[in-house]
Length: 229
Image (cartoon, helix red, strand yellow):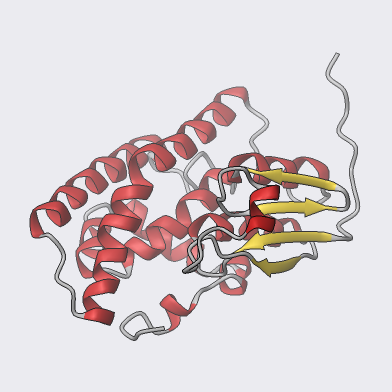
């Protein structure tokens, strides 16, 4: 027999990460959608001195984000988001249907495995370096990343079909996982042009951008994407 989940209070919730981090934002979106009060505490694994020793005690691989709820500590974004959905009251962010839950997991895995690196690091970050430092990206690598990104976009569109959200008519963790990646990708002209080739995905991105949770978690890159930090 499946044991019922114990609903927990949102008191003493901390999320350790960076405000402009893709994966930190994914977790923040889940917290915002559930209406959970939380504190975002800066933890920077990319500083000049490397990963702070105190952060390595929380996450042995030195990544972000890390969720701390009372005396419970959790890392890995997918696990964090499922925990947030399952232990806090609020709208359900995972489908009731087993098939839809499987599709949600498929989209999240697809994004992590095939979309994040080309869209964020190989396109968005390289574009930022061009703007901020005048460093020209490797054109062949940039074009290769765009091709990989387009393959991921096509796969997402095939799963989404004509539904409002990525997995059916309900907002799920798949949407929250996808939005930060595609939002940064769309800040680059070439990324924006690729997304525009898929009208249902472009409409989804515009629809998601209107959500209160998205506004509450926006980064400086979105406010002034053509300027240095």
